[in-house]
Image (cartoon, rainbow, N blue to C red; front, side):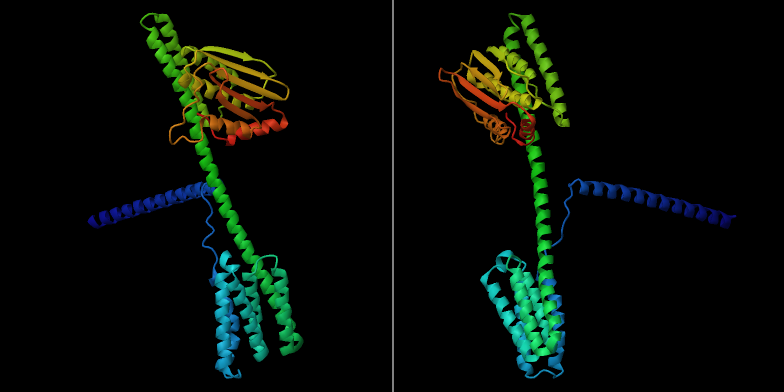
Length: 432
């Protein structure tokens, strides 16, 4: 009974171990597939850049030196007259070939005069060895073609490569008759193919590097745009809330209903700001000029500034309204914060070709203070860049009769104007 019990327990433990192993294997396969799918999706989306591996170098051309083993064996077998001269010539050939091969993968060193001189000496040594010995030594010409193709990648390659092939054909035919044409063809092919492969490899690496740099810059610009957008949105909203809170505090002791009205406005502004932040996070928020004008009037009134809003002209496209809405938001925020004005005029008029927005206050004419450190590129400077990208302009400065004036002009959106406004909204810096 005890033996049967032990066998049964061992059998149960074995089955449980098998089930556990199968469960772990299924889990591994499922996770492996999921991780592989996520990796492929990230690679396709450009989040994981393809690594092209280490750049090519002169080591990739060294194995071709094995073509000279025939000449090397001739020296050791004693079939080469004056073996010491042949050995020194082969050593000079290999040294010059290696020198040119390693310098050919650095653009500055490849175009240096020393590389060209070394290539010329390599051609002279090749001709001397081929004329002196012939036979297997003629294979030095294709190696010369490899070095020429690696070192010369430009307009001069075709002429120099053809001249090298002709030189190889003449010397080879002089030593081996018409069979030397094979050496000429091999030299020309090795020159052109080497240059083409190395140029293509270098171009692919440069394109990959450029693509990764563009992707990185696009991500950085989008992050900067989004942070500026949120900064602008929250900065304006908080300014309105602060102004209305101060008004409610002043009104509370003597006029409770008016204070309650200001508190109700604060609640409304807060709810609207929450909605805009959510829309901004999802990337669907577009400014509305009518909404901005209403908010501007409310903010100016709460700050004790009399708003005067005049609007005329043809209806505008949504993108143009969004750009002008940013101008209203920035100029009114500056007027509330810094101007000390008692009156602010917002005048929008337009023609079939252009629309103009003017915001004039009667304050002390002091422009908006510089943005805090770390927020660079915002404010009126950012607005100027955004309107310029859409084909418009922005002028801001003290008025001749006192106060401060902001004037924005935009072309009325047509087929081309809409595209310019889209680019301005998507790529230009956001104001504060």
